[in-house]
Image (cartoon, rainbow, N blue to C red; front, side):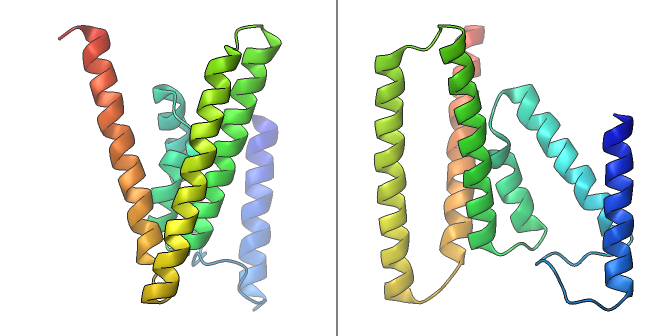
Length: 162
């Protein structure tokens, strides 16, 4: 943890020095003394919540990035990348320990691929028809998070046996 803390402190100092020197803006987020503490703390909290509930960090951090002012297309792509690495790592762990049910994994992969292709196609059509409104992306992230919350609640109620 000491190495991580030292790296974080060095990164914060480097970022603040860059801003103080008048260098060009490097992100959508407005970085300052306060935000260099607040936003990483939010990311840590989001990671802890994702870990406690067993969900990918992308599902939690996607809405967090939108709240921080990150462009919706960037938030969506970053969230998808986090989910890809989380699910790939979990799949590899199951394969290594011989616990992967291959027919179930193939079915999940195909459903995910078709859903992603459909969602991307629909989003592209909406953007072409109604202009480059990024609210569609933000709305779709919200819908996915809401559906995930409802499904997790139903699963928990069934597991408890209420």
